[in-house]
Image (tube, rainbow, N blue to C red; front, side, top):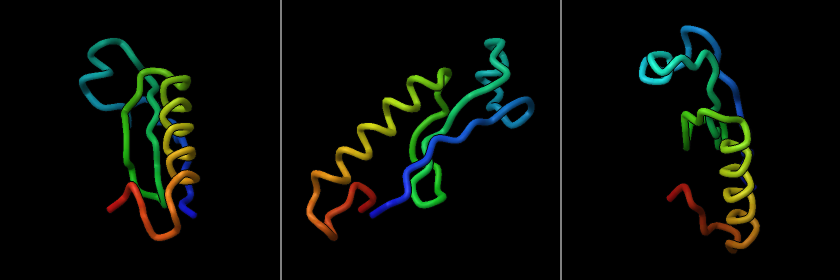
Length: 68
């Protein structure tokens, strides 16, 4: 089973394109410690993506992964 987390980035860690839009925080989806989706402008969007990854992880047989 993969570890699927949502992490936040703030300040200068936020990508320049989001900072130029005035955002000072964003969120990433991390799978097994590696960024897989994002950056997201809202935490809700990142959590929705996390839910999809978790459901996909449950629905797939052992050894069959989205990470392939």
